Image (cartoon, rainbow, N blue to C red):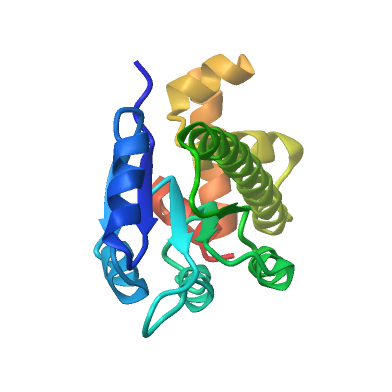
Length: 212
């Protein structure tokens, strides 16, 4: 069974918060906040919602300012935000979207429309996180390749093959199977790798690799 997504709803009007909870509570886990300040406190406390419904017109800290603070919280992953507002000014809508919000829903909202927008933005958020994960993996691969190239500059091709598997955590037996080398030959090559790189074991080899 798929885990329920977590939605944070932020509005200084308790009537709208109760309405949101009633509309979406059967489908999603819901956390309510009545101000931008409370929202930031909840996020800093460790709750990471899958999506935020954020009212724009609030005292002390409006939705736009709250959203900017959220974007500047480096510890948070990317979270899709839907602005909720009673404003009908297109300039206000444009301002919110230019900040990076994913959608804009006018009050009073209809249950089916709210649920449809949430589903759409959750799916978009899921896809964005998947793309980010792919980018991070590719960046790590590229970085590791540069590290290995610098590390293995003085190694022979055979020593490079063995060293790469050693760095990946393979023991001599596993390396011998993967490369179809005898166990004794792998042990001999591993010793040469240690000597050329001035390390004594796999832990030191790994630390050397990480510090490049």
